[in-house]
Amino acid sequence: MGPWRYVFATMITMGLCGLWHGAGWTYVVWGLWHGFGLVVCRAWQQLKWPLPPVLGWAITFAFVMAGWVLFRSSSFEAASALFASLAGAGGVGGTLQSAKLLAAAALVSALVPSAHELKDKLCRPRPAFAAGGAVLAVYCLLEVGQGAPVNFIYFQF
Image 1 (cartoon, rainbow, N blue to C red):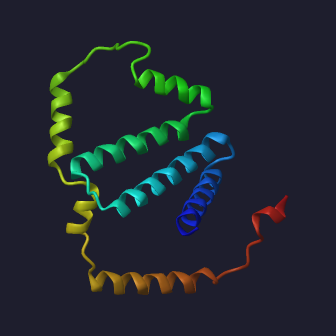
Image 2: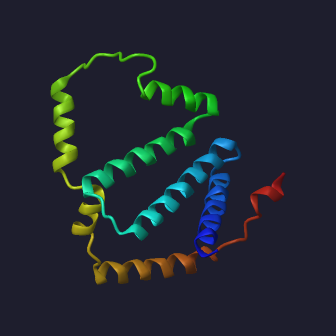
Image 3: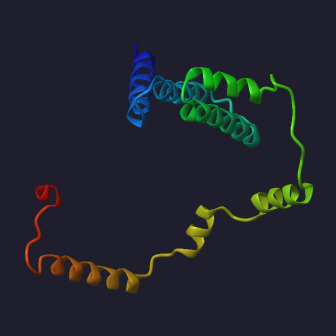
């Protein structure tokens, strides 16, 4: 009964998380989709068969992008139409406006550090700034209570 408890708890929790994001069935299915992904990931980890990192990244990326189609669609019909278009059901169309711009964007996204990497390198804690911020926060907190009381805005209607 042990693994089934995990599956049940994960699916219920993620279904509720989907409902929390929006009052529609596409949100609930989006949550269940992620619950399914978590269950499959856990089962795969139990097998102890590691995937090559690039393959794991590609599978995760495709899985999450498919979930976003559900999340952003107004209905299952709209999601189905978008999935069909992504699979090429309507044919392949469009033209590439600027190959140079596409190549530059690909290079930048591959070579420039991500925002999180930059944050981790550049935003080191600085005790002097933290102390100054704490003093400013205490000052603001003490100043909030000064002056005449103001009625809550909703009491004015």
